[in-house]
Image 1 (spheres, rainbow, N blue to C red):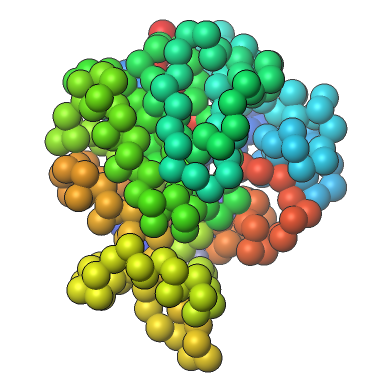
Image 2: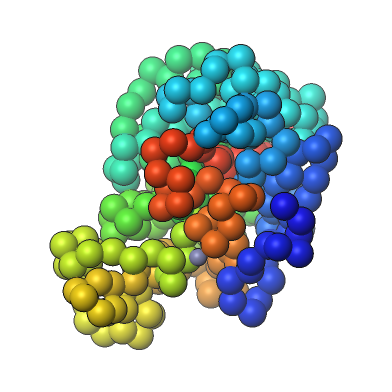
Length: 289
Ligand SMILES: [Zn+2]
């Protein structure tokens, strides 16, 4: 895998691929320049897992060896720097809900270091510096949410069900209720995930998804495009962007990934390419100590 073989989506380059201690990861320079947060999206490169999980698998529940996953988290912690350890991560318990957890100091380590004492949580928000929020991915988009004014953050898993349920908007609303966040201050990034050209769905899912939108919304925003044989292409990134705009986030503050997981299966795990025999990627977001 060289950067030359990376396939980027669209004309606007919004991400950079970096490498530290052999670990390759993806960042959004526009999030980075906000200064008070650290973030990354993991790739398959630079971990110790073997076989279908090779090499940077960050899921404990897909059959990989715990020791390997622990070491992979340690390597991610080193990339994030500031003396981070496994005790600083807090992870979702994803079941395609729109439930958001307010993460507090008492949650520190829930994921790699301690048992998560919650289920059905697809989004996390916090204002506690040093806690690393983490969500799991292999085609479904992450949404990074940063409020530089109230110094609060959110990170959500937004697959088609979460997107339809507007989990990104719900996270911002919860940040408003909890931290006084104004949506117009938020900077959001839709992370590496499946692009619209790759995301072919059947009529059943298309009809179900379409229920949440008017016909005009679907057409004007290129969310659902019919395809031969009763197939559709679902442009999740466009649907998420519409939902963030509706939440009150300014257009200029919404950054969309230019990297598709399915287009780049050597660099990234893709459910559509690898099926169940794969590891998980993760999105991470933390407020600097
Ligand atoms: Zn693609």
